[in-house]
Image 1 (cartoon, rainbow, N blue to C red):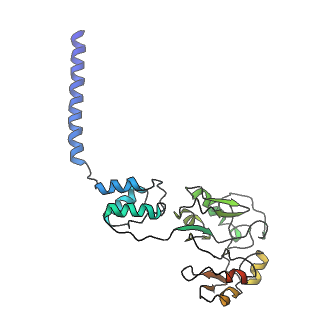
Image 2: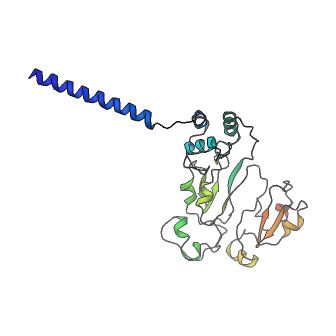
Image 3: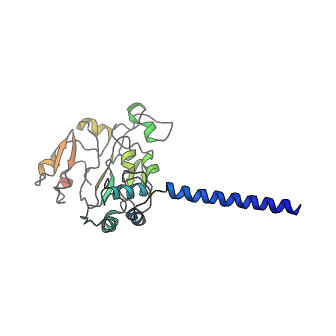
Length: 262
């Protein structure tokens, strides 16, 4: 009885030693060498794994930076401070980039936007995009207000307020998730310190815009005609502001009859 127990113990112990030996050899043979810079970069990245950089997560970006496939300032969440740290690790000088924030180009709240019908169904923008007119709002370009962008934001920086998505600029990290998610492409990344932007995306003619929304851009070109810096142009019945040329004088906002330039 005792001999049997001893023998079993010896066999189990010997088996464990052999397995440990072979595992150690396998680990040495198949181990993947990791560049020390990759580990260092991963330590300074935010760790949100939001995918805003275009890679699956922070580890993917770190590996791409070391391989030269991604720029040292490739993390939109970390911004300039993180880019500077990554630059030190990679031995590169990083020029300070422009901080950006997401902006929803629609002001069609429940109070000012007309509806063609009452909608009952799946409350998801990507699903509702397939229904007639792209949703119940009379403006086919307006925010549907069902929050697909809210679900996509990993930083709780966007919420639906009175039927329209609103971005909290202090919480937004400019990862671009909401931009990619919006089926109507109403959200864009703009400079954080942009002084004026058109809060409308409708390309309809003025008459049609006024019947659909009280505050929509009617393409009257008063903003374009009064901008002495050539920063505002009306294209496809909608005003656009070139942020590189805009000086923030505010004349366009003053002249806009619909007060849609914010």
